Image 1 (cartoon, one colour):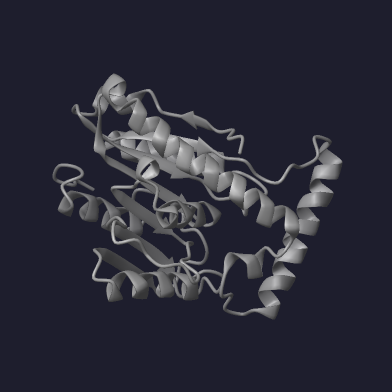
Image 2 (cartoon, rainbow, N blue to C red):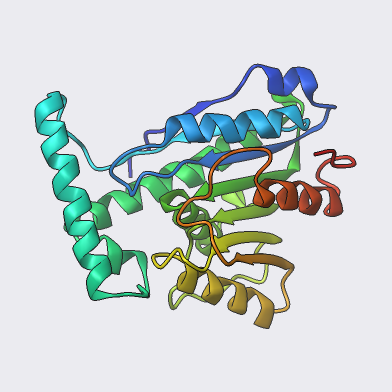
Length: 252
């Protein structure tokens, strides 16, 4: 399978990191049809400010029209069909129930390959970039979080994750959790009717398997929390990373 991906990294990350750095690959949101690049960059800047080598992954998505008017039509149709799928399944049991079209199913496999190759690429350049090869993690938001769980479930040594963060997304479906699955941080809001049930299921599987997991279930917050250092989930993430010795003392 041909893998096409791009990694972008804020320049500040290396300057602020103490070698060997802890690395994180960020998978932005976008419903497999778009990429929330600005959001991904803001998360990367937060990590870079705390000494991480932070990468943002540009993974493959469903092709869209280059013509602005046609793009708007496609976007409107996508969100309309997505809303209809959600209405039929108030608590979806999988990403496929939310994105049932063949194009989304196909591109998810391509995006998963991109995510796995990104981790492999960072690890293979660890010495050159002064990154610790056994301290490489991944964070995903919404659709990006599903790619994180896909990477974990692939159970491939080359794309092994040393820690993982799921924000408003992710699933295990019927797949068996590998015994080598990484420590996991999860944050979701109860009023996120798309993802809350799926993330509860992920937490339950990690917990039953006796694997390290921290789960934050907020009463309100909607889908894909606002990316802001003052947001509670980012503070909780910082404390969790510090508790796992992935950063120094966390200062909000």
